[in-house]
Image (cartoon, rainbow, N blue to C red; front, side, top):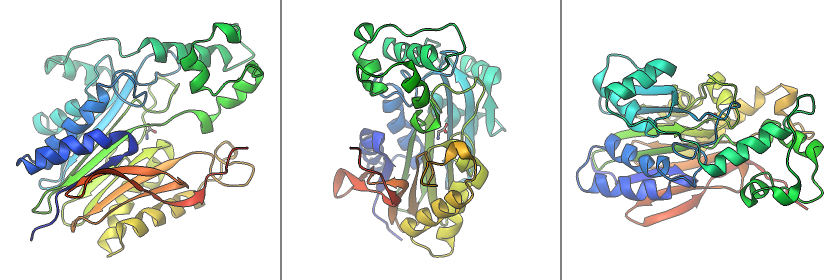
Length: 337
Ligand code: GLY
């Protein structure tokens, strides 16, 4: 059997797909190729969703989660609550390759990184520190923090919170609800010409999370899952909902029934949305106030992105080139007036 070599990723992973595709084309196993791809994004200070320059927890400390899964061996490795080490995906790969465990967390994850010779550094950039500080200063009117006047705000803060001069702390306080707190992440998966699949998901998690919060990204079956005989599924977006619905495992199981990647992704999201009852997760229209996307690829190389909200896009590289493709979606984003 020969299938087209292909890599897919969340929209922030365009360059990750390009690099991973080239490595697979040159004969690399799929897993190190996709890990090398997302490492580009972990190194990028301008991507505030992963690695160096990722948004921090509520104490202003960056905590990273990541996992890998290797189709041919069905082995996996993960890291959660990692501090001061930017390459969470590579560390997750080493958990898979050089331990008998699947998930190392917190202090244990950091000790493992030290043992493996990973350098330690402050992952907060000046930009993410200023964004965190403004969030801290405006997240409650019942503490002693106050924001500076609008004129003294850094343009990056104004852009991030979409502030206008009229916006006072009260308005911003509302903006800090879950709907406006990024859960950006990068997922990347790939398939080689023999139909072997592997994938990786890496993230700084929910911005301003409670320290110690672990999202879906390092959890096999939630943030990613591969069955080499069926396909791969991974996700970005609000991790809590993926965890309680085992979304990536479900996506692969639906593909096992012969359902296309697109329809499998949409069906996972339909089931997930049906289970949402909490008032803090629902908008006034009864629809989810959070985003979640799935990236699926089956053993034949068919692929799709599926999103709760659209239009949105995901990244692909194959023999047709490196490009964005549209995600299928459940609901159209309301147009801002
Ligand atoms: N999906 C990333 C997170 O919720 O942490």
